[in-house]
Image (cartoon, rainbow, N blue to C red):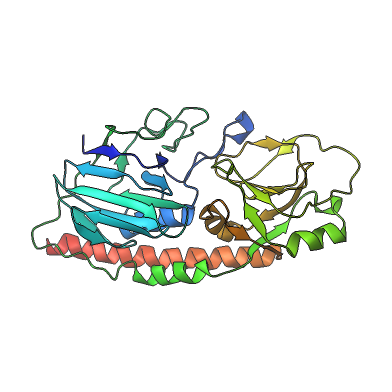
Length: 328
């Protein structure tokens, strides 16, 4: 095997971009909570966006490498070292066989990602390598990683005079930093928005919510002033989507995340736009957020702009790795 987990951190698992097309069979999509950060880490290394990588929560793992390779960290900002040398996020970093990567606690954000050149070796289950913890499938035995686990990857030995180009991810790093300060979280109307009065909608958009400690990969539970539903009937269970904002009888919103159930019986006041879901995934317990309604057109425009930025990163990285291949 290629590396050994010396310490696993709070919750570290193998993820990719998820398991699609199976929700009608009762299977969650899963995949990286912050899909934008996962894409960035893989693209900087010249990998496919969907290559398997490690997702860690709040505290990163300690890994001993048995093969040389290059890596990239992304997501929440973190203190990390290769042996005693500090390394930065969103940059290419060479790691030699015998060296140890230590990833500390996240200074900002809730989730970090470790991508490796050519991706981790992980078996696909139903079209994805993502770990689905509740079903026990995907990743490594369908579970979180633990001490002494061994993972494989295809070796990519950096030559002696290999000098990582710190500029390859620099443009996108600035984009990510700009996004961190975008507030509030934007949403479009949901299928049951009409079940809520104008007053309830005003309350929903004009208060700060706190993320509760019992939030997880399935859903973010929020705490704030109660949202009253004015519809007297009950909702027949129907399909849900990642980003749906459910309002249960206690009036406290729940945001459905990567491991969310395929169906649900709570009315949905809205759906967070796809471009903003990665920012939600980086919220920690007790962090606060506010909501603002936007049009479908604005949601589409934001996603297109994000995609254009990713495409620019992919082109820059492809050029960089072609140069590396020619020079060495």
